[in-house]
Length: 110
Image 1 (cartoon, rainbow, N blue to C red):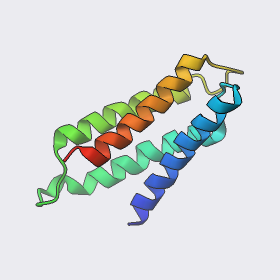
Image 2 (cartoon, rainbow, N blue to C red; image 1 turned 180 degrees about the horizontal axis):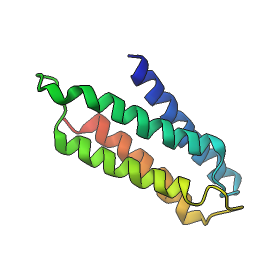
Image 3 (tube, rainbow, N blue to C red; image 1 turned 180 degrees about the vertical axis):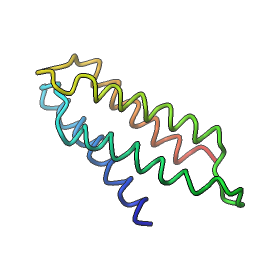
Image 4 (cartoon, helix red, strand yellow; image 1 turned 90 degrees about the vertical axis):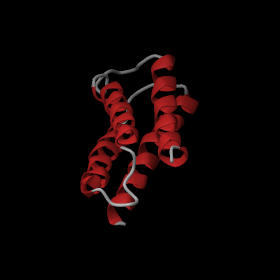
């Protein structure tokens, strides 16, 4: 449960920070966005790792692979330009979109 809470905090940092920057018109990777991406990736791996035992409630491995791929793409999009003064608007739209898609995969893929 604690790991799930940490994962949700990472989601809030990533999405909230990205939307706040987008709405301000200053397209810059902030520490909140960077830490949100790191927390999402690490806690997501932690949430998926114990599920390899083959229980009844184990998520589809393909779903986990898709979520990992999206999380790594988000991390790369956040980590590489983190020291730039600004990135373009489309870059932020991509980060926000991928974050929402990853959340949608988690919620709607059964």
